[in-house]
Length: 181
Image 1 (spheres, rainbow, N blue to C red):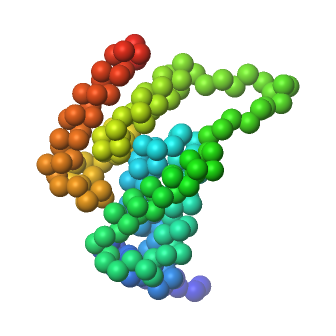
Image 2: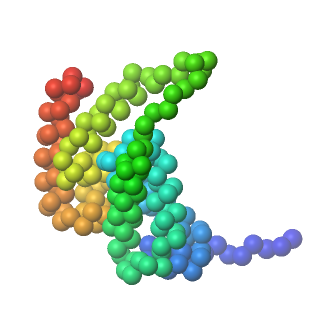
């Protein structure tokens, strides 16, 4: 029986970037697992949920292709967030989220009331000023702590705290007006 090679020891994020640059798909998989919530949150702040899910893959494909251009491994979260913002902007420019007509003979698969409510809340979040929108999506939807948000966005921890506080207040006001609380 052939012996399997020993598994590589867990790598640091910087080691994963270096290994991924050398073509190690497993290392890039760890990068994906670690940073997909950040990318998804950045996208959700700008596009519809279905588009965000699709764009996450596009962002990581662009990251895989452009990894050699990343000069500082520590800048990975901010670099991924920038790729995500650009992908969202391109998707909006292309007219993403425009519904297509469905055949009349499809069964009724309308979303549940809770899914409708969630989409309405996300819609209100996306209507907030950009400074609050992204930090709130990263906190409320993806569950990232303030420090991770600061690292990913380049904001200071104090700025993140202020944006979360003010953004939460504005979102709460918008939700109250729409009766969504």
